[in-house]
Image (cartoon, rainbow, N blue to C red; front, side, top):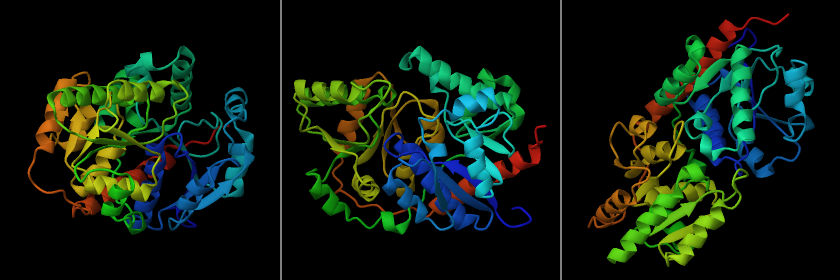
Length: 393
């Protein structure tokens, strides 16, 4: 807190259509801060004039959150160039001053090496270094350059997992003294749990037993291994249904969704792989609560939002065998190799043959403690940034 009250922290909105996990991260963070560290952080969300009204309205309903829209935060303006060449994104900083901001949170944004505020830079993961083949040379360079200018500008670096911390220490060894790990946890508000799971299942024409895959259609999310596993199961005569939801748009690879769905049709898997579209959040939680298990086949994660959401309800999980999934679940899930559809098929068959009836799950008792820790670690990171801050001259 400051002498006049809570730290007013500037965030820029992460549009749900571009990165649902990032949007949900912000939403859950704001709710956690209000619930467990009320009066210490006041989120001020800055958005462009064209950002989605529904996204903003949902965030504005969280107590304590302020919304500010300005052309200064439109994605196509040249703020990054000014931040590099002049040391400051003057238009954005003018808005920060107008809203009496104390700290700036940078997520895929850079406001300049002369930024007159303490700043926390969130590095969600290091996918561009671990899976460079998924990025064009320009996109890879842009991401790496962005990380390096934030490091060079003295930002406090926020990471999402111990796995990401190990990557950071290896790739950027000089920043270990100014990194913080803030593990995301989720506690959906009651208004997002009002949809009746049985009604939602009926709405999408799903069977009572189905597996849920709520990943955006990006190549590293690895839908391919799920399609391959379903083909194995169908050839065995096993009737397994996977319901997939999430954005089908990836600017890096616009044809990826169509490629996956053409395989689904070409291999006769239309009844087994069901794409539901970009579903409302209440439906996401309803489907998750009713699913036989969550699937996350991702090749890489900084910290999986879908895994955290499944943990909150005690949903069984079938996950790719990557370090961060092991870290998130403490080994309490079923795992398969990222390129091993046979192992995934065997897990799906085993779980689907469980004779127990389908369940509708509610939040587990340990959710509050995990979310409180999430909020506390974020507050600690902001405090650390303010203590480290030295104004530029």
